[in-house]
Image 1 (cartoon, rainbow, N blue to C red):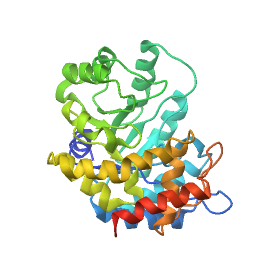
Image 2: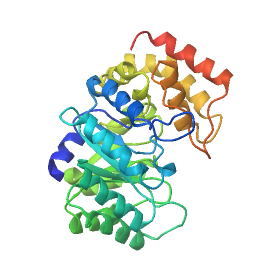
Image 3: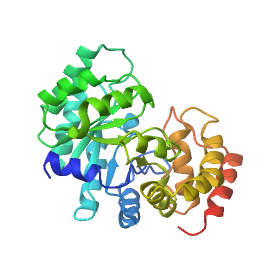
Length: 303
């Protein structure tokens, strides 16, 4: 798949990022992960992110990254494209990007470089170095320490033909508008705020009609129903699901920092597709919180 093909896929429907399966000892569980992907693949997501943020990329070590990506590529071959996460220090991001390309992934989501602040010149060099190290498509994730301006993206667009996507996890409307007005259809745009459904209608108005869904991990039918409601401007369905599920869901998610991943794993366990515990420094939901989430899921009906 060439970068332009990936760009087209990115703009054509809902995307999601499966959680990574760990066993009771906290080790990667490839059989469980493969079974998860086989379960999710038929629901209609246009691409899946392997070892992304919800997939706990930040906690994977050593050979685990390659094992996760290889399992995803092998399991989903011919079914759904796989975009691998890659991030951290520039040389680590390059190594992982090249590994993902070697293993047959269709592109990478370039995650933040973490910890240290950096000016725009440094961020440009970081992104360009990763893009120039591979041939497949790259999507940059604007979040945390990696916050690119419209002018920086214009420079990168000239230097890196394979930089084809922009995912926003910041939520600054002025910045998003300036980027879209400046770059137009040069990029495919993806809403990437946590629980993106809450912001989906607003982002569609900003020229970003697609987003990545975390709840697809445990309520895939509802996630697709919500996406279809956004695509068709069905505000009644959006408001019903926001009121009945997403807003009370946020009340649970927002209780503890890091629950954005933990609550997804809890949901997967509730619906019979458990992925094991999260790794430290994340913490699992408390039993009472699991029961609250279970009640919300039950109201949605069969998935």
